[in-house]
Image: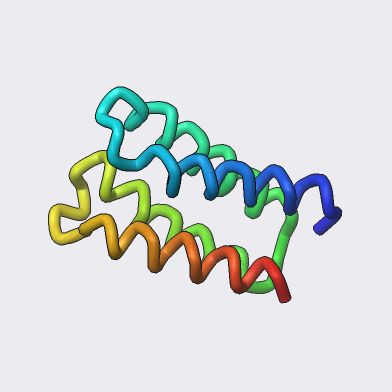
Length: 87
């Protein structure tokens, strides 16, 4: 994965972490998560499926699909993804 793609994914994830609590930003947070997932899929990373699954769990926080998700769940998923991308 090239550095520009990685930086874009980090931007997406940082936006979500910074704006998750603003109800007015829910749709935008979901859009940035979607963009991050699409970039990871296109990058064809060996751990891509695992990373995307975690981002889908994070998206479940906003969509209500994952009713057990809390802000801590969201942060854990995002931090894990960022750690995996750093390697």
